[in-house]
Image (tube, rainbow, N blue to C red; front, top):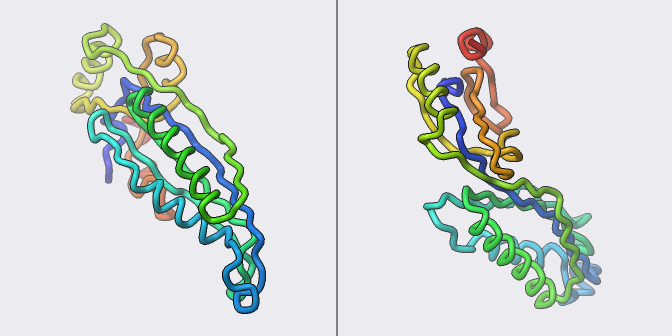
Length: 197
């Protein structure tokens, strides 16, 4: 089990999410071979997006979370859609990655003869609080008194908004679990009692 309730957050990782749609002429995969394909174009753009260099510190990440398109194996795809996400503990780095991503999807669409649409579907600002702040020290003291080793970290939670506005805030987990964000994710129910305490 992962000790989620032993972890607490004193920083909010900012995130940006985009839904990318490519549209192309398409056609029959044999008789219209060579016509622009939305799947070919968007797949190439996603591969390029995944190669954007990101710093380890401040931690910055990117991901293609969803991809779909086309209607049949023998049809050149007229439409393809991907949903991408980027996160960073640095708002500056997040903006850099987002700008690079938009440039990649625009230029790749042109290269592959596709029309494109970039829709922002998520924008969560980040922020942080100094480790010496009284709120942080109090949270550490409470966890230590309960026999829990504080594990300070950044993540993306409800504290993002107050932290982005300069308002001190922390988020503390409440349970044990495993397989976070997977189809096998589970919660150890008895851990809720000490977690909520």
